[in-house]
Every structure is written in C-alpha cells, then in structure tokens.
Image (cartoon, rainbow, N blue to C red; front, side, top):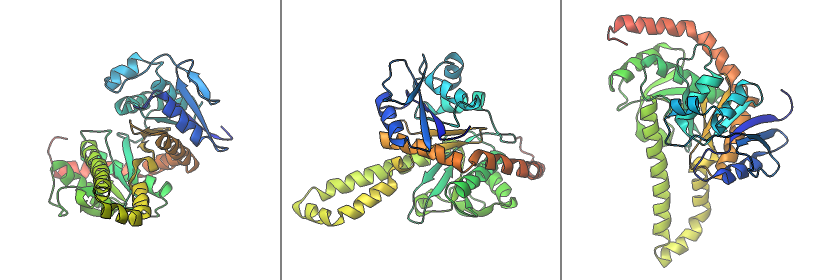
Length: 341
C-alpha cells in the first residue's frame, strides 16, 4: 500500500456520538493521513470515505459475545479492514474489551506474544513515560509482565525516541522483596533480562517520571491510570474554582493564566488521543470513550505515526529475538519456584 496512511476509524465508538468522530477524522486528514470511517448508511462524513456497516457494539456488551454476534459492526469491520489490507491501522473509542477481542480474532497476535497489552503515555515534567498494561489483562503471570516491559520499551524507542528506555515494576514498595507473588516473580524475570530494569517503583512517582516504562498487570494499571486522570482533572478544576472565588484570586489568576494553560495542555489526555494495543500483527489504537474531536484527531495521528515508525515490524523482530531467552528465563523461574503457574 502506497501514498497516504489509511486509518480505519470506528465512527460509532465513543460517548459523544458519530458527529464528534467525523469531526476528529476531518481534523486529522492530511496529505499523509487518510481516515476511512466505518458506520451506518446516511452518516454525513463530509467527504471522507465511508464503509457502510449495519451493526453497533455498545459499551456494556460482553466483548467476546458481541464480536462473534456482530460481525458487521463498525468496530469489527474496522479491525477486519486491517487484516485484509484495506487499512494500515484502526482507531476506536468504543468498547475496549471488544476492541481487544476483535484484534485477537481478526488482526491476530504477533508470533511469540502471549497477550497484547495497552500502552498509555503518561505526561511528566521530565518527559513522557509509558504505563503498560493499562487495562487489557486483569489477570497476569510473571512472563506476561516481562513481555509487556519488552513491548513498552520498543514503543518508547520508536514513538518517544528514547534510545535505551529504563523500566520499572509497579509495586507497593521500592525494595525487591515488596509486593505480591506476581510482582515478586516478575521482578526476578525483569532483573534477569537485558532490559534496563531499575527495580520496583511506587505509584506516587508516576507523574514525576519514575522510569521511561512502568510495567504492571492490567487491573493495577487501569486503576492507577483512572486515579491519575481523576486526580488531575479534579485538581485543575479545584484550582480554577479557588482562583475565581475572590477578586484577589481573579487578579492573580490573570498572571498565572499562561502557565496554567500550558500545564493543562501537558496533562490533558486529549494531547495523545489514545493508547496502542501492542502485540498484534496490525496497528490498533484505543481512544478514550469520552474522546473529543481533538482526541480523536490525535489518536488517528498516533496511529499514522506508528505506521511511519514501523512499530509492529520492530516489535515482531524484537519478540522473535527475545523469545528463546525468555522461555529459558521462565523455565528457570518455574524450577526455582514450584508454585503452580
């Protein structure tokens, strides 16, 4: 496929309606990016290509059942387009579980990948950090976390342009002996790997750039991510409320307004727009359910950037290189810890 990067966009994903998705796709369209919308007949795409679909997956549907039962849904059809070569990447702000299920069924895993994982960029004063897994896998084994760290490192190298990313393991303390059984085992695997592992990190340092890549299971990562998002939003809104509460505050607010605007821009989730679902044979970006048109546009640009940087190919090469050594490490850990895995 030559020319502009074709990005399949689920027009029915998201809480703000298809009009907001269309507006975001229009904003992202450029000489190098060609969004292709997947949605119902009659949708006003304002000139963008439309692939007509007849079904929709709701946010509250069971992912696997929905993907099997609704093969002509906008989300599934967009994923299938990547598999069939009609698009190079897919973006959806819809049901995250359904996106994962459709990705596994239609795009499929890279060889050697045990489980795909969601990589979210966390803004910090020292530069962006990657939190992985941020919600794809609620229950994990130690070898999964090792692979997440590897995939997150490739992401940091290719997208964030960090030559040798540092890796930290999210835990309840920095000491190696702190944590549950999963983190204790994962710590051993990460320490034995060739990654630049800096040991355990605590969640209080996530916004201070604990490491370039922070790895955890999807349950913990999703809780941490939503806590960060809620804390940031509440703090900024609270600060604005306090500033506007008095005449003196309003006067001072005028002085700090430029700095406050820059801070809000840095911390706004819409800045990156979405998160990569890493580990598939094609590129998939999951956008926030409440994505604005700006977030949708940035998610599409993020997908196109991943294509430009060959993230899937690089990840496939790295997984092929590491798979043999990883199996040896996992076997050694299993022999040293006979707990059933």
